[in-house]
Length: 159
Image 1 (spheres, rainbow, N blue to C red):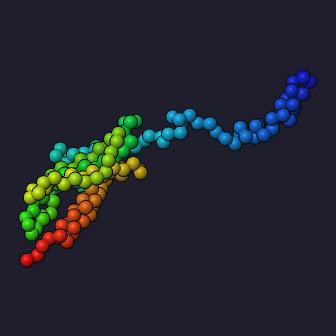
Image 2: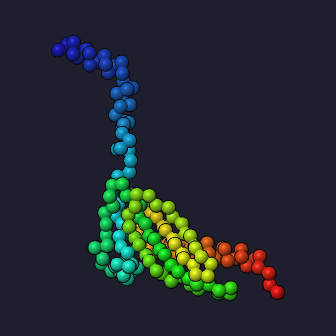
Image 3: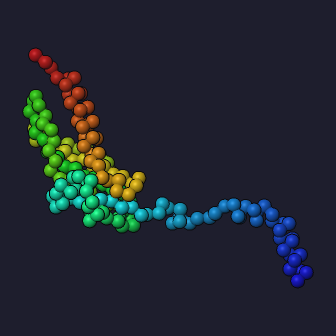
């Protein structure tokens, strides 16, 4: 008993800094340090779900999806078409809107075509559950399209 008490006193006297240090820090494995995954996204397709996918203001719990562990992003994909002439570019008309969970996601827009244009925009988010409720892809497209029109008009020769 006396030996055990002396050993305890010696170990506290010899290692007081380590004893305090060990209680103040935590060691976490890589897996424990990663963000806990519990993401929910809207999942719908305007071709299948119709207007419910466009306007999520109703109580459409069947459009809610818990993302799989490897799916860490919510996405909105918007595909629109427009026609243009030399003077006028028509407003894009929605052809398809999809919302879902994805493993990886790259936001951005592309426009393909000259007179008949196909606009494809993707927005990604992971800030909070159901963050893919808007159609922010449309805003990004108009900024890019307006910039391109302005640059084109700067170099256009007026008779």
